[in-house]
Length: 443
Image 1: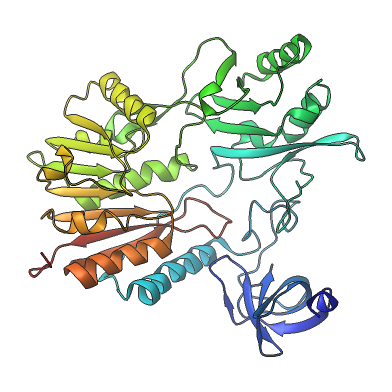
Image 2: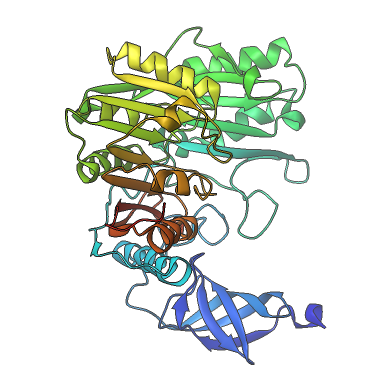
């Protein structure tokens, strides 16, 4: 029955925007999520994926446009799954993301921030410093596709360029396609990892079989012609090694805090370099570490917050589960002549109260967990008697859940929260929240 409905064309009024950036409508007593539609519009749609409780559709004609609708800059918008909001005015994108954050806090966490922070915004195009580009040899087309997957599809989109990727890569997709098409390994090279530093761009070519001498020479010649740093990955992440040039350094800086952080091309770093700098400065301003205070930095990674915090606090303790990243964080501290940090390896999803760092006193806490959030560590943090906690989140749903634990179970206050536009033209919501303990807390 569902398959028979696929392809059905009908008109709907869009009443809202979903957390994934799709229009929300109702048709025949079912919710319909519509790709490419904006709140307040009337659109003609085609049913793409019927389901029992809801349907999915795509816009085929805009009958009444929203004032927030704009022309997408990218020629591939609508086909490529990399962006979902290029058709929405930038200010409206920020408003929608702010609504998502507040809705999650209210609905999931049962909390409300006392103050709404102004949105943190930055560059809208060419901002993306990290990406994993799919690579696929397509014999019927006689070419190699390089880029992102089609929206709602496992297939790679045929792209000429990408407007949100750093320009050192975004305008080279056709070059990379032609480069790989001429290689012996074109059918066994599934992806390219992109990592952009302040001074150079690295591409990591994943290859399933050893490369022939001719393929290696072809890649080296391309690197020499473009100035890109090329790496090879024949197996897992530990197998990544330089191809050309033989030496070089990837790093990014926090000029305001006189910090340089070195990284490897497959290390986690923030996608938007400019927003990352502003985010770190905002987090420090909200946390307000003093020269006589000790700060705990959880999910510390390479030290993105740890090292800038160390410029202002008496001491900073960073905890991260990935041991190689912890060691690189230690090395970056040494390179920056920072001697007041301590770096620990710790699984924060299975916290061990016996660990020495968990038995210390901290004046302030900063936490920047992955999408899964930090539910397991929250009860421990709530009892540490810190004066303030800043929570940086890449998932408003888990931030809301964790905020609910702090506020409703342990009596903390959500002093402020706001969004940061780390991923313009996508539905991804990056946010920041400030908590302070109440007078009465659960022991």
